[in-house]
Image (cartoon, rainbow, N blue to C red; front, side, top):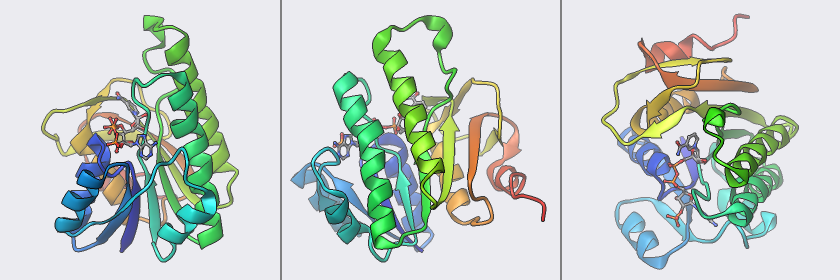
Length: 218
Ligand SMILES: NC(=O)c1ccc[n+]([C@@H]2O[C@H](COP(=O)([O-])OP(=O)(O)OC[C@H]3O[C@@H](n4cnc5c(N)ncnc54)[C@H](OP(=O)(O)O)[C@@H]3O)[C@@H](O)[C@H]2O)c1
């Protein structure tokens, strides 16, 4: 399988890329700095320099063409509302349009629980983040692509547990980036999970079983 990762140098993105490579898949993606590109290329990843806020859909289509799937796990982090709009919002629109132009049908988007940390009253910047992420979910669901929206709970940099709670609705808790990455890889390998919004949290079900559990009954 060929997977184009947007957010290749990020916490979740880099773990997913490494897992895919270990399985023998071919990984390509977008990076912002030449040093990152060189390191990734040396590791066998077909990384291209590019910035999601300036690349055009047609340019990105040229990079994703031939991929079996796009994995979008980029994000502005705490870089401010403007960056959130440009990356988590408009960046997703650009990637969707690129996928449509290039004929890449499968598109996995890492989003967030709409109710994440709302009880903490984190202020307008966080409210904006949640609204932008929801807007991106809506855009992808209307894209006509073979999409999956995965909403992980709070991300932890701890060793993976290998078990999760995955389903259309979960209680918002936390989950390790390793388990999110492994769930994304399992979803890439399960095309019958399609056009679903899934929530992912800490849980006791082995990841492959959890993904098998969201395959629709036919
Ligand atoms: N943190 C949480 O608790 C939480 C919870 C639920 C969902 N999420 C979502 O989960 C996803 C993954 O989170 P993460 O913590 O793994 O992310 P991360 O480590 O912050 O990585 C973000 C990635 O996006 C890339 N990126 C940022 N701006 C870009 C641009 N203009 N052009 C191209 N690439 C750009 C970064 O590249 P650089 O290396 O160049 O910066 C990096 O590869 C995000 O979408 C986040 O919103 C997070």
